[in-house]
Length: 295
Image 1 (tube, rainbow, N blue to C red):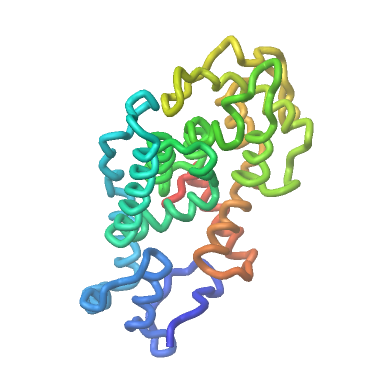
Image 2: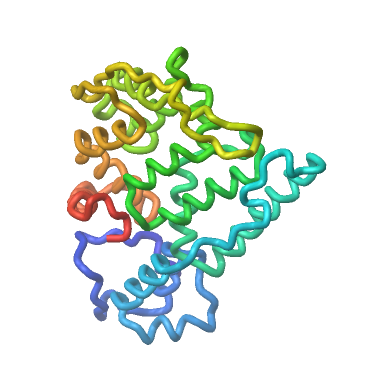
């Protein structure tokens, strides 16, 4: 019978015992949680290692893993295409490629998939293979990296700029969609430590990412559409820009970010019934390591 619940009474390292032996069931459970399963012929090799050493190995391998080889069309703008059908073919081919990577690359792709469901976009919304690849590249690059850097990079991807209307947000008409989701979905959680006015002021600070020459081309910052007037975010006033928003967020709401992200990781990988004491310990580790995900 498989293991359904890997909740323990704390963050202490698992030590095999007669009551909790290191056996086939536990190996398979580990690889279901840290990957997408384990071929039967590899179970004995895993059992030959201690649980602690095996987990360390899986983490080290995931951290060292290079990102997927860019496809030929990784930076193609719309003018490179001859027919709309090519968009569909490339989009489908990359989805198939990533599925194959999941089976080969285990934990790194498990984390990338987890973050894919956190920093949500929809290909149906932006319909561009090169933007899809660039979004996926950020997921892989930062899956076990620094969370603050991850958030900063994700907000600049064309997929996210289009999906949450950042590309339409200017000093004359700031769009609040991304600023709201930055707090509600990506870092703090709903109604947790921010106000509507923080969203309004942050949206103004995030304006200017509108410089795009054609569909599927890079989207760059354009200073003339950025709101360069004073804004107040979390009680701090200044002529804030894109990076400033994130600096202020991670400085002023570090506790809330750590608790929200660690709760989400716990719920996904461990149990939907949250153990607040374990999450609190995770949050301490997260903050102590400057929001590095791997520790």
